[in-house]
Length: 376
Ligand SMILES: NCc1[nH]cc(CCC(=O)O)c1CC(=O)O
Image (cartoon, rainbow, N blue to C red; front, side, top):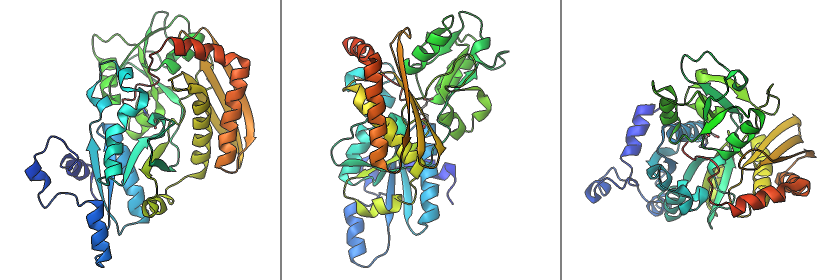
């Protein structure tokens, strides 16, 4: 099996890499187009290749490798190649991200390559996917979920472990309004400051000698996949003593995007799908779709399988300053995607009836905002 190094070096020579010359692109190493492969198949040549697209961050590449390994296990006869691309979102860490239109800036370039047939699948964090995908692009599968909770990472050598221990005025690093608004409501003495960049960049900002942050709040899943689980000092959820928070829609789950109608790839992906993660993810995205009205809103969720087929779903909508919030929960019998969709939709209705509309309206008037940093 290829090592991390080999995979990464292959991906750096991808035809998708805009920095390499045309000459190089047409060399024998160039990736054959899907159309060419089909011709090969028609001719009875059994080469079959699956091109995997991902963003270029360390976490994104590790995630693509996880998918590659899972695919290799079920289809060892297929050849796989990872193509890691810098997206608009990666290139614009500082500009006003909202000018590009919410989440799609992390996915647009990859989707263009998918539709052209240069990629067959794109590996995403479900959390970073817009609720409305571009035409002809669909989610092919949602894989087994990693821990969906948020986690606290203290500055190295800190004497503290939890948010409750931090002295008044300590600065918590997060660019997510969902996180800061929920935490602010429970720990009014803490301060919040934006922190941008990939997980690695954020951690180095945290640990810098002259750094201003006491801790960061990050998704546990990303840290665990990067083998940085050891840095987690506290997990946050609805049951955290002193007050935790509800995680982002889709957090912790990987989703694979495919071209609509690409039955061959869909068939391959069906073996990677996880039923529980698919249904919980569907319910969470249905709730978000109902509430966002085209805008990014701080919504937290928590979905727990109480027993097989019984999903408990909690949700919160918070005002930007954390002073107002509306919470609701529902237990649903969820046996299929339709049930999951309905649970999310109904819980969204509950939130609106409890007054979420007022918070959402204020946020819509206050546009633009960014929901999550997106910088996995
Ligand atoms: N905001 C970016 C992002 N998108 C997905 C993850 C984590 C991995 C996941 O949710 O699957 C992260 C990092 C973070 O929020 O700490």
